[in-house]
Image (cartoon, rainbow, N blue to C red; front, side, top):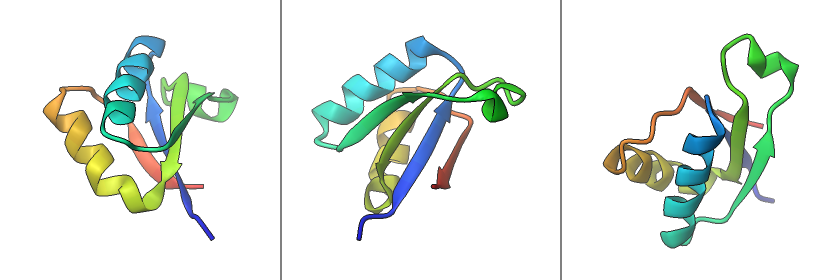
Length: 74
């Protein structure tokens, strides 16, 4: 069974950039609009991905200077 992680981002622009660079690296992902529980933290968009790719996701985002708020297991 696959465990999913949720990457939270503060804007649709960062979400789109993250989707593009992660897809180019072969990371399976699903973009989502976050609910009100995340709005208080300033996050509006998220990306779900296989938690086994977490290190790759963090590295790719860091290399591409794409800021994110949090990554957690969902």
